[in-house]
Image (cartoon, rainbow over all chains, first blue to last red; front, side, top):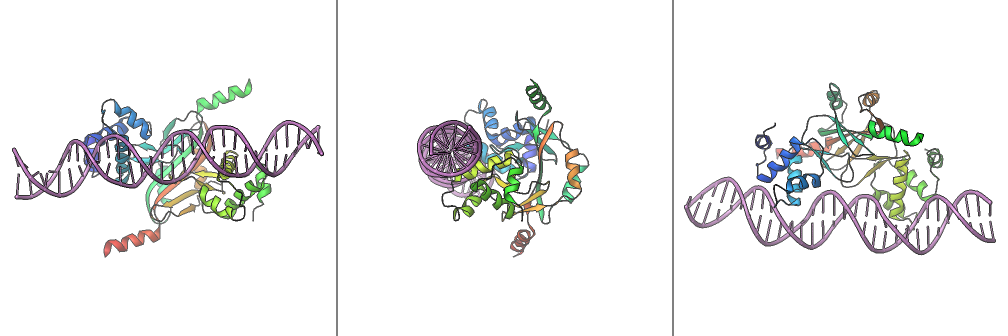
Length: 142
Length: 142
DNA sequence: TTATAAATTTGTAATTGTTGCAAATTTAGA
DNA sequence: TCTAAATTTGCAACAATTACAAATTTATAA
């Protein structure tokens, strides 16, 4: 259980109710949610919460490096409370997004990078997850 | 100079005027353009060209693997006529997108990938290009 | 504590990239 | 040349995101 308040403060972000709620959700739900998923999840316990606030908050969190923004889904921005260097896989069939640990290879990604100042690295895989791949194979055989 | 017509046919795409124009532009302008950049560039020589056709064509080209879609820019989809495995760097200041060759490391990216079927791999870097980094440094010193 | 300023949140309106759709046009095959 | 299929087109609709200004909350200083 990560201490959300301390986490925000350590990133220079004042821990308001709303920011705590958004950040806490991301830290405790590693599902790479969209704005709407976050908003919908928090609505019940925070009836006055505005969608705009979720947008504003996420923008701030990303700017300050407390949250990562994923470019894996063109329809909606995805967010990740885990800012450590790891890859992502998205199934084009069912839409699930999963983490891929990089072990030692992560450092290699930094060294092979561009000249200039690197602020973020994303390694994205798209394709079919094992389940969907199997389903597809079955459909083609019958 | 790549033979656009043969390239399209080899990907199972009938080479219409419009498709040729879009594909040819991508092959000859490695600038990772947006839909609008492509549309604007082709408008003069094809006055009847529709923006929707550019969208339709790019969708088809990506589906057939003739063109790569880049997730590096959230505001507009970017396209790349070079579908070989290489990384991209985008400067957050000036917006320029440049290619990064992966040499031998490319294969490594495949092996470390997820279970299931991999259909595309993207390695994206964001940050400041050398020029913008220098400009920023100068501003901070004065 | 109280007054004042600054920061944050909120709701609505506007914007923008993209898609849906049906008519018009072009192309291929008989 | 005729007919069907594929492609293109323009416009309307959509959905994610941003702009903005008012309302609210929080911090600071008197």
